[in-house]
Length: 424
Image (cartoon, rainbow, N blue to C red; front, side, top):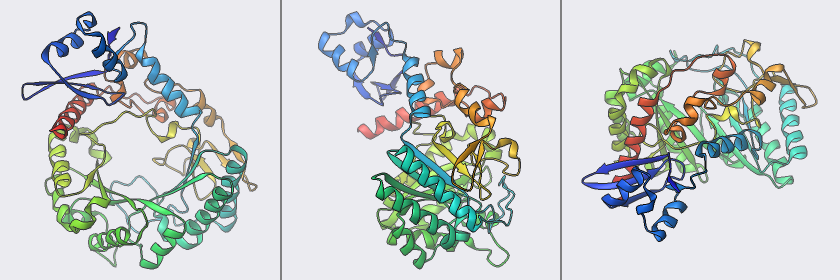
């Protein structure tokens, strides 16, 4: 037997803890056991304790190559995933024009013919593949700009097909939240659209400088009122409030805490995300971000995995799942929403009028290309379970991504520190 390569050895307040990055096991031990495991001196450990440690994955057989488990989990999630995820973009148009947005905001919408094609494609998958779960993920542009004709109609038909075939149905939307109304919420419940991601660009002052329209320079208040409507009206709501932070707005972002009544805060999951143009320069602010998250948690909100609570995933991102499709309004299909959809080089195929997916050669690249972590350096790294590595899209397109080991290590230390505090 040997100590797992993926153990994290942590000392806090003169106490000793061991955390496993794959199993998420966390135990407090005495100094002798702590040192025995750190030195992989298993002979010094009692037999009963060895069995307990083995069940938590803190030790394993000497012959085991632990990175093989991660590779196997990844392959299964990529090629044998029983959850089909269909991201649908009924329009690329948007009522806002955020400075960091990479989209072109074409004022085009999915035609009636393409609505029928999208439904036919979904039904073909449901009836022929019979997956365990079918997920619709609405994206844009702003999808609620064409709710009744597109989001409602397509969702209703796909939900019905899932019910007829005994398949679990899930309906998700990323929206700026501006157009939500009480009447719309009634229809949300009908189509089981109960999972939302809505973004605020910092507290009110900064948000309104980024998300505004000529006729409304205060979108903050309207969006926040609509979030309250969702919490009150949606059955079993799952609401993620994404807080985009920058070096300019981070100092005041916790002002958002008092925006929402205490009774609905347990329904709101906070996800703090750096605006991508400032990603590298904000990495050094990890302690400040963690402090902000703790303020939200103390005020009654849920905190989503982020800097301070990194978790292992079998996939580096959703694009690795070969049962995942991003469908544009014009029926061209992609693997990722962070794309220039005017550049058809990035398309993995299109959907024919009878609902059949016609792949391009790029589609097979996603099948054949190893995940980004499948290289000698990453496979030997003791932080592999906590590092999602680069996305497969960057690897396919030949982009070089720098190793962020120091940053990941800091994330893991913060996570273990947070978990230890919860034990008290």
